[in-house]
Length: 377
Image (tube, rainbow, N blue to C red; front, side, top):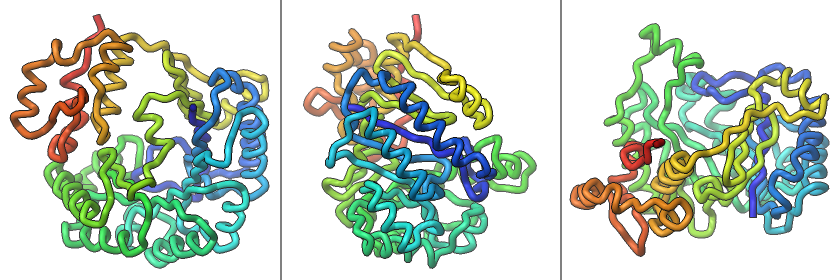
């Protein structure tokens, strides 16, 4: 089974923290959708006939798509790939786009999971982040989605925001739980160089919160969500039983996926390809029936390191037998003393042949993974 990702490269406005590829100029939106359908056809053999168990509309802002545009994409997907009634089909959405009418149309189109970019329930923070919605829209949209028949709803939250103390963060968590979502994704505010926040930080206009502050807010989130029945199945992702994101989990399990659209990535088990992050050049290339992608054939070390980086962030951990059988790499032989030190410090444990980070260890997941990386010979 494989996944399909479509990167919708348009937004109403630029959020101050976002460095994903997008344009606020939507003049070429219709042309872009037709190019997507053409790329789907051109890439139909990339997954070697595997059935699609997840479809994910990301971006950008996929909720800007009209029903007709979304219908064209779904028709193109179904024409060239096997999609079943059980296929998880997720659409990222902004609260300000989710009217009752829009939600009903999304449901009719086949979307069965919503990922709503709420980010905060504080109007001052939302303005600071340059979000288009307010706290009222943030709260109302989840109820409207339930009324429209959506029973698989995820919401996004951002923590470690300057001038938001722990009490304010606790209020955000409580307001999120009151909406009874099935899934919550939460990320620390990261300051990227080519964003408004990046420029503000470089000039001294923005004070960046330190790692200790961010870790404290993540711990608050983990503890509160666990009290309410959520599992932290990945460092930044929490789900009620049965509501893990199948699509994102496929990334962490190294399953194949095809990315469609400008800046989209694809993976087939032995290589990755990266579509160009330029709308104009993407359209020109697809017009010539050419995929505007850079191909990277993975070395053994890169495959091992990717496996460690992704699996150590999850609740299921890194399978030592998979590392040995698939990559001829014995992690315990290569890093026995380091792994023992992790166990002594309460950061990791070996359970059923898997290296699994503890709740405390997940705070250092990326650092631990990099310490275990295989160096290219």
